Length: 156
Image: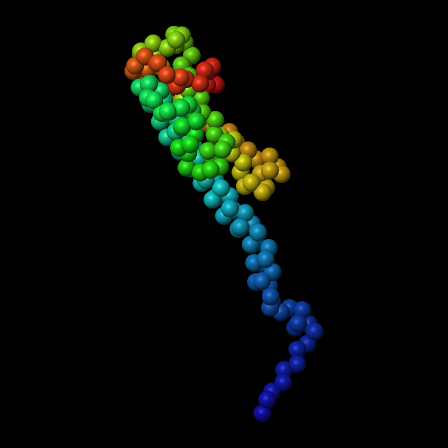
């Protein structure tokens, strides 16, 4: 024999069926934003690491007067890992403040790579969450400069 259960309205109001689904729906957006935030900060850190390597490479080419068949800053920019970084990267190669003009062997040369990073691009464009990521490297000039490796001015 099949037994029929009749539920009272009072029992129906106290039922917790679907509560987990509602709680999950409330927490899910926060978890997604947190996950995307962690990924985005990691991407920004990767850009900083890449800029550090690019600045080191730029100053090394400059101090040994390497010929890269063109503008050294453009060459360094093209070495970036991502198209986004390549398109927005600014590279400056110049004598350090206080160096002689023109720079002599032994003078410090500074290379700086700068990129303006937008955190969580969909949200960052709205709220303006940007950070300028900058990396620089300094080395002593090893050979007299004969090519146009310096970008001129100062890298401040």
